[in-house]
Length: 562
Image 1 (cartoon, rainbow, N blue to C red):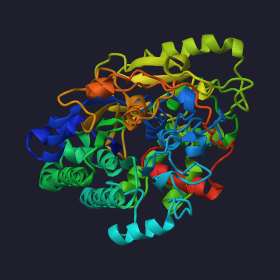
Image 2: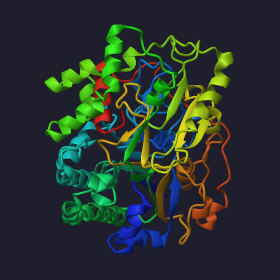
Image 3: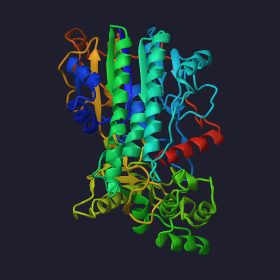
Image 4: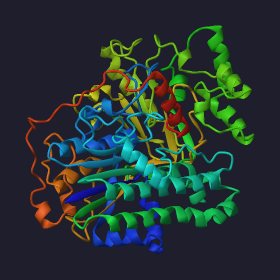
């Protein structure tokens, strides 16, 4: 019995279902009819490092310790890129390895570096959080060289962006990127000995971020360019047909006794506005600025709209926007960059001794500036409850600019989302909007000067509703995942199909409703603590050199995540 898990990163039924109905995805549709399909919920926040760590561990962030791309350790002025060494839990292939199972893993976010001290149990390829040219990017350099002779120079990421009317070039790049990864899977599955194969296709995620407006002509960014994007439509369709053909090839080459799980770590949808909670926190007095002429001067420019968004807009119109916000993270490639760097209001100008709360993260995460926790905390722990209530009440009063109804759907407190020994690393509050075309950002570098502003850069972003197609050995035809099935269910389901006991501390469950009766009968069994489990060493500091960390943060900014 073998199990193959292919991440169709960011895939959504909003795209796949209409295409399948038109007969454009025959291989995927055949797998759906022969097996199971439905919605697979993401975890919150639906970001790659959190989502894929959930897939690899079957646990919530409170148990594995990863909450975002960066780990700040409650220090608003620091931040290091998370890696596999930040994960305080065994990964699914490490558990399987203790039972003699070998794994091919490629492109799985948060898997770099391969963690076992004795070598990866199978074959490993790094992901888009790997340093460029890293010596440990692969577990077998000789086999990697053989792979590159077959598929060409291997690309672990693509940072091509549509800005400056670059959609056609982005589409060409992403189609080639997708095709190479599909051919990589074909090569590895025929070349390596494996029981579990897990590979994430990043190109489908980049398609959603960069080309949603070209796909969805109702998007605000498509206005006035409808004819241009209609002409591009055949190539947009060809991207998804490339995916379907690749899936067909992979399935046809797999051994007969293989269970296939094609899943996305989150869905996708349009974004048209940004909501910057640090602007709101500054306006409401929760953030205080330093009292100096220098900072007052920056604040004066900020209030008049001199922000990264404004200067980036100028550069985009003038054809200078080769990068996004990362241009303002030290690259300083032009006089305009350097001018902006001197004028921008940033976190460096906050008076942390008087600041009570700040936002930090991609999905509305807000932290109190607590004494004894943050380096310059000023909020007494005894005052935290009243402050949380005050902030929550204010957030729930923010009106939707078009309807006047509340923009915020819910403000979660830490314990509502996370549990486990690392839950204390989580944000104090997490804000969820009703309208997801409004995208929350929590950059205390004040990217914009308005609470709500038009989005720039990516035109699509993550949603909670992902996809799942399961087929092959052990899968019961004509079934669907139950309501509430989510990413944490992948690891226990994979282990169960491999015949490996599911650890008792996993939060996810075996998706028994998708399995044949013989597999479903024992789906609820859990293993006791494994005395042979070797605890993975967790680096207390950064896994990357300072230079690599900075380069990866720039890459994440170009991808739209910082």
